[in-house]
Length: 596
Image 1 (cartoon, rainbow, N blue to C red):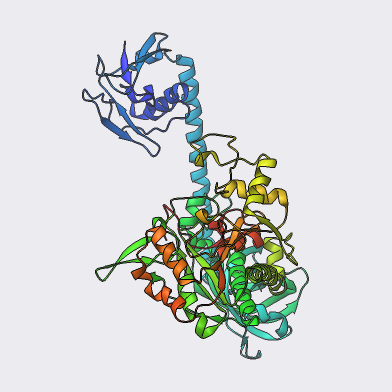
Image 2 (cartoon, rainbow, N blue to C red; image 1 turned 180 degrees about the horizontal axis):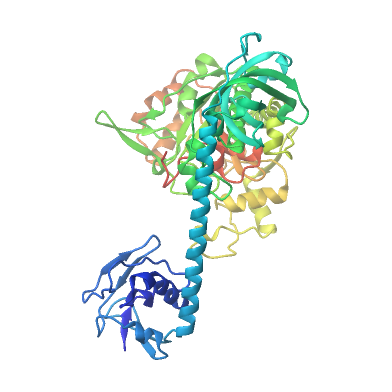
């Protein structure tokens, strides 16, 4: 009895003459034997239709399954229950080369055993539903009883002073008012309830007793309900942060669903879809707070070193890092782009402001989903006039060391929760030329990424090759400390970078590589000679007319100068020990994700 089916199709789709009661059980039984891992759905009709035309589709969550005509319209269930062998021709269509598979019918005893198991599962489900019904009835009675309980604020108590939780220890012994959201809760019988409440500054343990935890509102409390609490602050070493609020009055401000949709089993894409809620998870709260503190520390570093902050536009009509990674848009009928870097604009304000920096968004339309790439990221950039290449190297090393030290001092407790093993670096970094790094990779058998060399494995690096993400991280892991990789070949770097005086084939450039991340800073001395810059435009095929304003910087009092750009998210990966860049920001943007 030949039957033409696709490989994914189970015989269970071909069963007919089943009673309504046993249909589901037979489907599952046959499917369990022939295709235990298949995705399937029950059909509602009494007979399973077999189309005479190719292409009829049964949709399930996992597959779209097509099935085709047979010599007979249906296969009787008796055939499947017998010991008769059924010849199945497995193929995608009638013209395909078909494989033959001889499958024996399912033994009746085995079918009966599976049906019995299914009925036991149904019985278990029935008992669960009955238990749920009893629970709902018990809850109804609780609510009925709770509706008769109420409480009022004791007007003889001192007026409660509104405070932020972070300042709670300063008000121990006083009556205060706190507003926030429930992070966790637990009850002890009907007389005692403990709530951990957050207000965005910190978390505090709160204790409710007696009628305060017996009202209808109290029974409806759950995670993320927003509430107002009034009570007296007491020292308690057992409580979170050593302070407890003993509540004497409270009000429910906003309710929440009883089930919190995020847990440790939540998949990455589900978590990202629920980023607006994931922000309330303890780890993400710490990361967001650390992001704010780290940004603040960068600003403090710059201001302490005498820099001026500049706010450039992120809508541009010129490119800085190459046209292949530009996000284009229509700007009132003219082509425009989201900026890749604010470097060129920072250079224009150096003659008026001196050392300048900016913290702005940059955009790269890179079709990559690596652990360290985003399409939108926070770019910290700086430019300095009248410096040498050595000054530039000392500048970027000082930036990393000083900001790291400030972060440790300012965010010690939070940093210890996120990355307790972090130690801020000190002093100068190890410096290696690009050539020395290529030699290091060859000596330590660090090979090129196969995806970059047509899938070939074990291809050694040659001079002129780009040391990509994975090999770069492997190299820095072996070195075991931050590295300033310097003096890249001219062909590998942007047109605006100045060349080394001792070797015109090399640029005065630097990439700072940090352990666990790789490249975090890219910088260089900028080409300040007008003629050489114009020649670079011609060599790169760039119309200098679009960059007249940049060339004017060389016409109106040029000066040797240099600068750099740092990706905040990569810096966070390093200092917080986060393995994937998407976890450094609440709403990451990369190829395939621009929501929510």
